[in-house]
Image (cartoon, rainbow, N blue to C red):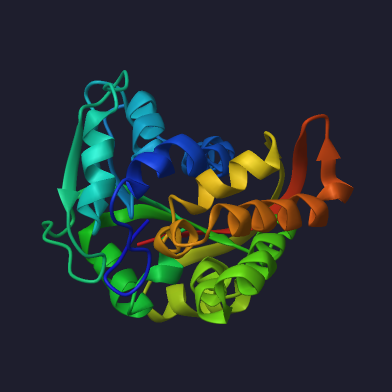
Length: 268
């Protein structure tokens, strides 16, 4: 989930991503992989793979005769992905590289999966053309992109703006600056994909104690340094503001947040 002008992390942020961010991202993965209808023996590319949540589930679906490649621009994410115990099924090959210039052969994949990566690519059309190039004829691409800002994203962004400034808040909000359904459709058609469908997929995300979770979660993001630079008192104020804003979604000790993605599906 990274690219040269987008989702870059440093320090221990990749480890924090696997610990915290996957609690928010992970629940979306079964639906994305399920829509792909993966078959044993298929070759799958998890593009902008992060720490490999999508790749590991795909590996189980394609089985030991299949092949899964996880590609990400961020070496820290890949280091964590390699350290996670291997999943059952296909072996996973981890590759450091750019989505807009993949060092991968033509027509080498049956399926491409990309969860929350497209919005970070510096040239989205170039990335889509690369996806088209590395797919076999008739191959499938599935892209999951946020539909809009969620209550959690809005609350965290507002608290960041208050305690860390507008630039930091906007850096965090960048993940939700996304092409809408019509724009996604146009981009896929322009890059010669066919049978394009855009499917809205809502979900309720359950999170633990939000005051603890939000600091850990944002420590896995590109604003980790700015959050770490706050005083202990400021971080406590930040967490309290997020918890208060999300009180309408309280669920026991945690929260249950409504959110929605668009999944773009197409064939080469």
